[in-house]
Length: 83
Image (tube, rainbow, N blue to C red; front, top):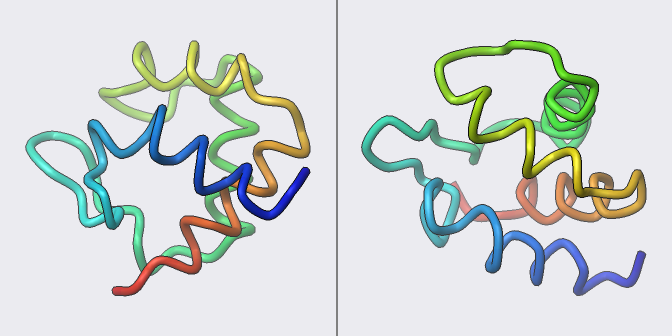
């Protein structure tokens, strides 16, 4: 995946709930401070249909539409957001 894929996916899919800088908001958790490996693992679990918490019903369909390359790019982008 191109380097901008993570940024584009984050802005179009994730930022509305997790905040523009991954700071979290309302019932949606903060993403900053997690490693790319942690984020990618969670996205893969959601994609596989595992229940990880209260937001699984919202996260699973979003993750299901991501390719492996998009998951990696998204995880790297989120891990690089300022804390």
